[in-house]
Image (cartoon, rainbow over all chains, first blue to last red; front, side, top):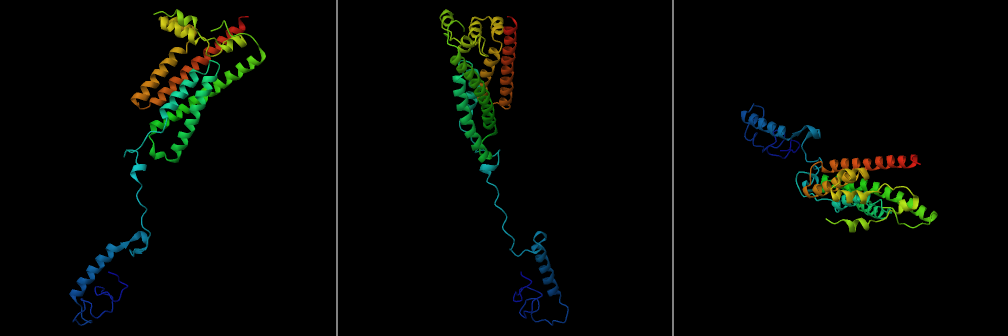
Length: 176
Length: 101
Protein backbone atom coordinates (compact mmCIF):
# COMPACT_ATOMS: atom_id res chain seq x y z
CA UNK A 1 0.00 0.00 0.00
CA UNK A 2 2.09 2.93 -1.21
CA UNK A 3 0.32 6.33 -1.08
CA UNK A 4 2.83 7.75 -3.54
CA UNK A 5 1.99 5.17 -6.18
CA UNK A 6 -0.71 6.58 -8.48
CA UNK A 7 -1.29 3.23 -10.16
CA UNK A 8 -2.10 1.43 -6.92
CA UNK A 9 -5.76 0.39 -7.22
CA UNK A 10 -6.20 0.48 -3.44
CA UNK A 11 -4.84 4.00 -3.05
CA UNK A 12 -7.71 6.43 -2.34
CA UNK A 13 -5.53 9.45 -3.25
CA UNK A 14 -4.54 8.11 -6.64
CA UNK A 15 -5.96 9.32 -9.92
CA UNK A 16 -6.62 5.81 -11.04
CA UNK A 17 -10.15 5.72 -12.40
CA UNK A 18 -10.31 1.96 -11.88
CA UNK A 19 -9.73 2.22 -8.17
CA UNK A 20 -12.34 0.02 -6.49
CA UNK A 21 -13.52 2.78 -4.19
CA UNK A 22 -14.46 5.10 -7.04
CA UNK A 23 -15.73 2.60 -9.54
CA UNK A 24 -19.10 3.59 -10.99
CA UNK A 25 -19.60 6.44 -8.56
CA UNK A 26 -19.99 10.13 -8.95
CA UNK A 27 -16.74 11.61 -7.65
CA UNK A 28 -18.52 14.67 -6.28
CA UNK A 29 -20.90 12.74 -4.02
CA UNK A 30 -19.82 11.55 -0.61
CA UNK A 31 -19.37 7.82 -0.64
CA UNK A 32 -19.54 5.61 2.43
CA UNK A 33 -17.76 2.84 0.65
CA UNK A 34 -14.86 5.09 -0.17
CA UNK A 35 -14.84 6.38 3.36
CA UNK A 36 -14.53 2.85 4.65
CA UNK A 37 -11.70 2.22 2.24
CA UNK A 38 -10.07 5.43 3.43
CA UNK A 39 -10.32 4.29 7.02
CA UNK A 40 -8.73 0.97 6.12
CA UNK A 41 -5.90 2.74 4.34
CA UNK A 42 -5.34 5.00 7.31
CA UNK A 43 -5.07 2.02 9.62
CA UNK A 44 -2.59 0.38 7.32
CA UNK A 45 -0.58 3.58 7.10
CA UNK A 46 -0.54 3.74 10.88
CA UNK A 47 0.81 0.24 10.96
CA UNK A 48 3.60 1.23 8.62
CA UNK A 49 4.42 4.41 10.49
CA UNK A 50 7.82 4.17 12.10
CA UNK A 51 8.73 7.07 14.42
CA UNK A 52 12.37 6.02 14.52
CA UNK A 53 13.01 6.26 10.81
CA UNK A 54 11.34 9.69 10.53
CA UNK A 55 8.38 8.66 8.43
CA UNK A 56 6.84 5.73 6.65
CA UNK A 57 8.54 2.40 6.75
CA UNK A 58 9.98 2.25 3.27
CA UNK A 59 12.55 -0.45 3.93
CA UNK A 60 15.42 1.98 3.57
CA UNK A 61 16.90 1.74 7.08
CA UNK A 62 19.83 -0.63 7.51
CA UNK A 63 19.01 -4.09 8.81
CA UNK A 64 19.45 -4.57 12.58
CA UNK A 65 22.76 -6.07 13.68
CA UNK A 66 22.67 -9.81 14.14
CA UNK A 67 22.18 -10.96 17.73
CA UNK A 68 25.39 -11.94 19.54
CA UNK A 69 26.27 -15.56 19.34
CA UNK A 70 25.19 -17.09 22.66
CA UNK A 71 27.88 -19.74 22.33
CA UNK A 72 30.56 -17.11 22.90
CA UNK A 73 28.70 -14.33 24.70
CA UNK A 74 26.39 -15.79 27.32
CA UNK A 75 28.19 -17.07 30.40
CA UNK A 76 25.15 -19.11 31.42
CA UNK A 77 24.75 -20.79 28.09
CA UNK A 78 27.62 -23.21 28.53
CA UNK A 79 30.23 -24.02 25.94
CA UNK A 80 32.90 -22.27 27.99
CA UNK A 81 36.13 -24.12 28.47
CA UNK A 82 38.81 -23.80 31.12
CA UNK A 83 42.00 -22.02 30.17
CA UNK A 84 44.77 -24.41 29.14
CA UNK A 85 47.12 -25.34 32.01
CA UNK A 86 45.20 -23.20 34.52
CA UNK A 87 45.65 -25.79 37.27
CA UNK A 88 49.28 -26.41 36.31
CA UNK A 89 50.02 -22.67 36.51
CA UNK A 90 48.56 -22.49 40.03
CA UNK A 91 50.46 -25.58 41.23
CA UNK A 92 53.75 -24.40 39.71
CA UNK A 93 53.34 -20.90 41.10
CA UNK A 94 52.76 -22.09 44.66
CA UNK A 95 55.46 -24.77 44.49
CA UNK A 96 57.98 -22.23 43.16
CA UNK A 97 57.86 -20.35 46.48
CA UNK A 98 58.09 -23.51 48.57
CA UNK A 99 61.09 -24.78 46.61
CA UNK A 100 62.82 -21.44 46.15
CA UNK A 101 64.95 -21.68 49.28
CA UNK A 102 67.35 -24.50 48.45
CA UNK A 103 69.91 -22.83 46.16
CA UNK A 104 67.05 -20.94 44.46
CA UNK A 105 67.36 -23.05 41.33
CA UNK A 106 64.10 -24.96 41.66
CA UNK A 107 62.12 -21.88 42.58
CA UNK A 108 63.46 -19.93 39.61
CA UNK A 109 62.75 -22.78 37.19
CA UNK A 110 59.21 -23.40 38.46
CA UNK A 111 58.49 -19.66 38.66
CA UNK A 112 59.65 -19.09 35.07
CA UNK A 113 57.51 -21.96 33.79
CA UNK A 114 54.50 -20.66 35.74
CA UNK A 115 55.03 -17.12 34.43
CA UNK A 116 55.45 -18.16 30.79
CA UNK A 117 52.40 -20.43 30.83
CA UNK A 118 50.45 -17.85 32.82
CA UNK A 119 51.23 -15.02 30.40
CA UNK A 120 50.22 -17.20 27.45
CA UNK A 121 46.93 -18.16 29.14
CA UNK A 122 46.32 -14.53 30.16
CA UNK A 123 46.74 -13.34 26.55
CA UNK A 124 44.44 -16.10 25.37
CA UNK A 125 41.80 -15.06 27.89
CA UNK A 126 42.03 -11.34 27.03
CA UNK A 127 41.61 -12.11 23.31
CA UNK A 128 38.39 -14.03 23.95
CA UNK A 129 37.07 -13.36 27.46
CA UNK A 130 33.67 -14.98 26.92
CA UNK A 131 35.06 -18.31 25.90
CA UNK A 132 36.76 -19.32 29.14
CA UNK A 133 35.42 -19.76 32.67
CA UNK A 134 36.01 -17.08 35.28
CA UNK A 135 37.32 -19.66 37.78
CA UNK A 136 40.12 -20.81 35.52
CA UNK A 137 41.13 -17.20 34.85
CA UNK A 138 41.34 -16.48 38.59
CA UNK A 139 43.45 -19.63 38.95
CA UNK A 140 45.76 -18.31 36.25
CA UNK A 141 46.00 -14.89 37.92
CA UNK A 142 46.81 -16.46 41.31
CA UNK A 143 49.39 -18.75 39.71
CA UNK A 144 51.05 -15.81 37.96
CA UNK A 145 51.27 -13.80 41.20
CA UNK A 146 52.72 -16.78 43.09
CA UNK A 147 55.11 -17.41 40.21
CA UNK A 148 56.35 -13.80 40.32
CA UNK A 149 56.90 -14.03 44.11
CA UNK A 150 58.67 -17.40 43.81
CA UNK A 151 60.80 -16.21 40.92
CA UNK A 152 61.93 -13.05 42.73
CA UNK A 153 62.64 -14.90 46.01
CA UNK A 154 64.50 -17.67 44.19
CA UNK A 155 66.47 -15.20 42.09
CA UNK A 156 67.45 -13.23 45.22
CA UNK A 157 68.70 -16.36 46.98
CA UNK A 158 70.41 -17.61 43.83
CA UNK A 159 72.24 -14.28 43.45
CA UNK A 160 73.35 -14.36 47.11
CA UNK A 161 74.51 -17.97 46.77
CA UNK A 162 76.44 -17.23 43.57
CA UNK A 163 78.00 -14.16 45.20
CA UNK A 164 78.94 -16.25 48.25
CA UNK A 165 80.42 -19.02 46.09
CA UNK A 166 82.42 -16.44 44.18
CA UNK A 167 83.81 -14.80 47.32
CA UNK A 168 83.97 -17.55 49.96
CA UNK A 169 85.48 -20.94 49.24
CA UNK A 170 84.37 -23.31 51.95
CA UNK A 171 82.70 -26.71 52.05
CA UNK A 172 78.94 -27.10 52.31
CA UNK A 173 78.79 -29.55 55.22
CA UNK A 174 77.62 -28.99 58.72
CA UNK A 175 74.43 -26.91 58.33
CA UNK A 176 70.99 -28.20 57.56
CA UNK B 1 58.51 -45.12 62.10
CA UNK B 2 62.21 -45.00 61.66
CA UNK B 3 63.36 -41.54 60.69
CA UNK B 4 67.05 -41.95 61.45
CA UNK B 5 67.90 -42.47 57.78
CA UNK B 6 66.09 -39.25 56.83
CA UNK B 7 67.76 -37.45 59.71
CA UNK B 8 71.21 -38.42 58.49
CA UNK B 9 70.44 -37.52 54.86
CA UNK B 10 69.23 -33.94 55.12
CA UNK B 11 70.18 -31.64 52.24
CA UNK B 12 72.75 -29.06 53.40
CA UNK B 13 71.91 -25.40 52.88
CA UNK B 14 74.50 -23.74 50.65
CA UNK B 15 73.29 -20.31 51.72
CA UNK B 16 74.07 -20.95 55.38
CA UNK B 17 77.35 -22.77 54.79
CA UNK B 18 78.56 -20.00 52.51
CA UNK B 19 77.28 -16.86 54.19
CA UNK B 20 77.15 -18.04 57.79
CA UNK B 21 73.53 -17.05 58.53
CA UNK B 22 70.20 -18.72 57.87
CA UNK B 23 68.31 -18.50 54.59
CA UNK B 24 64.51 -17.99 54.75
CA UNK B 25 63.99 -21.70 54.21
CA UNK B 26 66.43 -22.91 56.83
CA UNK B 27 64.84 -25.24 59.34
CA UNK B 28 62.30 -26.59 56.87
CA UNK B 29 63.69 -30.13 56.91
CA UNK B 30 64.32 -30.28 60.65
CA UNK B 31 60.83 -28.90 61.23
CA UNK B 32 59.22 -31.48 58.91
CA UNK B 33 61.16 -34.23 60.71
CA UNK B 34 59.78 -33.05 64.05
CA UNK B 35 56.32 -32.90 62.50
CA UNK B 36 56.66 -36.49 61.25
CA UNK B 37 57.64 -37.52 64.78
CA UNK B 38 54.54 -35.73 66.09
CA UNK B 39 56.35 -32.99 68.00
CA UNK B 40 54.16 -30.10 66.89
CA UNK B 41 55.54 -27.46 69.28
CA UNK B 42 59.16 -28.12 68.35
CA UNK B 43 58.21 -28.04 64.68
CA UNK B 44 56.54 -24.63 65.04
CA UNK B 45 59.47 -23.37 67.10
CA UNK B 46 62.01 -24.26 64.40
CA UNK B 47 60.03 -23.26 61.28
CA UNK B 48 56.55 -21.79 61.97
CA UNK B 49 55.62 -21.42 58.29
CA UNK B 50 55.74 -25.16 57.61
CA UNK B 51 52.23 -26.01 58.84
CA UNK B 52 50.56 -23.02 57.06
CA UNK B 53 52.33 -23.97 53.83
CA UNK B 54 51.23 -27.60 54.17
CA UNK B 55 47.65 -26.47 54.81
CA UNK B 56 47.86 -24.19 51.76
CA UNK B 57 49.09 -27.02 49.53
CA UNK B 58 46.39 -29.40 50.81
CA UNK B 59 43.79 -26.69 50.25
CA UNK B 60 45.14 -26.11 46.73
CA UNK B 61 44.66 -29.81 45.90
CA UNK B 62 41.13 -29.74 47.37
CA UNK B 63 40.33 -26.52 45.45
CA UNK B 64 41.53 -27.97 42.16
CA UNK B 65 39.56 -31.19 42.69
CA UNK B 66 36.31 -29.64 43.99
CA UNK B 67 36.28 -26.44 41.87
CA UNK B 68 35.21 -24.36 44.89
CA UNK B 69 33.55 -20.97 44.57
CA UNK B 70 35.84 -18.25 45.98
CA UNK B 71 38.46 -20.97 46.38
CA UNK B 72 41.16 -18.95 44.67
CA UNK B 73 40.64 -15.97 46.97
CA UNK B 74 40.87 -18.17 50.09
CA UNK B 75 43.92 -19.89 48.65
CA UNK B 76 45.67 -16.57 47.96
CA UNK B 77 44.85 -15.36 51.48
CA UNK B 78 46.31 -18.52 53.02
CA UNK B 79 49.33 -18.27 50.74
CA UNK B 80 50.06 -14.65 51.67
CA UNK B 81 49.52 -15.40 55.39
CA UNK B 82 52.01 -18.28 55.29
CA UNK B 83 54.48 -16.22 53.29
CA UNK B 84 54.11 -13.38 55.80
CA UNK B 85 54.71 -15.78 58.72
CA UNK B 86 57.84 -17.04 56.96
CA UNK B 87 59.26 -13.57 56.29
CA UNK B 88 58.43 -12.20 59.76
CA UNK B 89 59.99 -15.27 61.36
CA UNK B 90 63.07 -14.88 59.18
CA UNK B 91 63.49 -11.21 60.05
CA UNK B 92 63.10 -11.90 63.79
CA UNK B 93 65.56 -14.80 63.52
CA UNK B 94 68.11 -12.62 61.74
CA UNK B 95 67.72 -9.80 64.30
CA UNK B 96 68.36 -12.28 67.12
CA UNK B 97 71.30 -13.75 65.21
CA UNK B 98 72.99 -10.40 64.66
CA UNK B 99 72.28 -8.94 68.11
CA UNK B 100 73.37 -12.08 70.01
CA UNK B 101 77.01 -11.53 69.15
